[in-house]
Length: 165
Image (cartoon, rainbow, N blue to C red; front, side, top):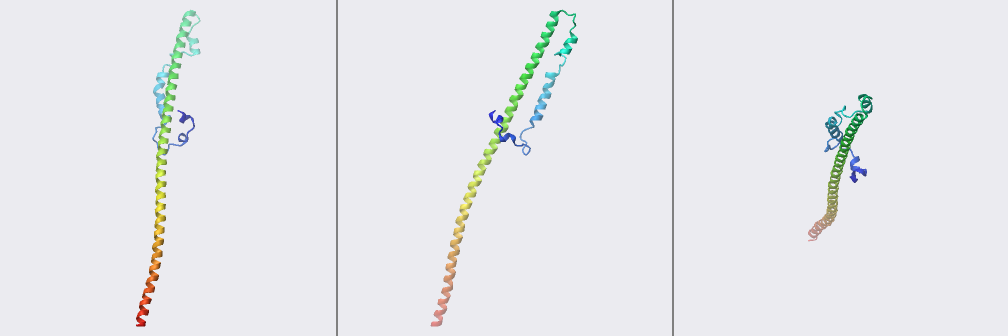
C-alpha cells in the first residue's frame, strides 16, 4: 500500500504500450452499475425530508410519526452502512490492483536490469577480445614485415653468390 501512496514512477507511467491490466475505470463502472440497483434501486424506501413531510399528515398521532421516522432513519443508516462497506471494498480493490501493478512493474524493471548487466558484461568481454585480436594482428604485421625484409635479403645473397662464382 505504501508503494501506491508514495507516488511511485511505476504508477505514473502510461500503460498504453502494454495493456496487461483492464481499464480500472471500466471495471469500476461495471462494478458500480451492477450494484446501483441494489444500493439505489428502491428510491422510495428511504423517504427524503420533503417526502416524509408530505406522507406524514399532521393528523397522525405523534407515536406513529415517531415510529415512521425511526424506521426511515434505520433504513437510511442501513443504506449508509452499505455504501460505507461498498466504499471500503472498492478502496481495498483499488489498492490491491495498484499494488499488483507496482509489483509487476518492479519485476519488469528487475528483469530489464538483469538483462542490462548481462549485455554490459558481454560488451566488456567483446571489447577485451577485440583488444587481444588487435594486438595479435599487430604482431602478425610485424612478423610479416620481418619476413618480407628477410626474403628480400635472401634473393640478393643468392644473386651475389652466383655472380661471384
